[in-house]
Image (cartoon, rainbow, N blue to C red):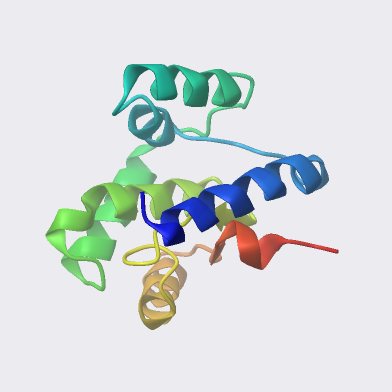
Length: 137
């Protein structure tokens, strides 16, 4: 494990302990599928933490918006799941989408295009950020 990944994990754990009670937390089926992947024991631990959180609805509108994020841009075809994460958050009117995926989700270079596509379809943007950016002292 790289020191960057270890640092992200540490910050996420700190956020979970010190900040999570300040927010209503939600997950999507897509998050559950990703959490279930990999090492079985680690996956079970992740799923146990996520189990009490309510699921956001996966709608046809979310699927269509995700397709637009890829078709129109800025997300590449290989980032369809990332587009779906964003679209589910947007269509469910979530305030924040918390992620360490800075390649396709928490990416400042892509953010304005993502927001423009959402606005064009009548949606308000979600604030996409990392746990570190959502820390309050």
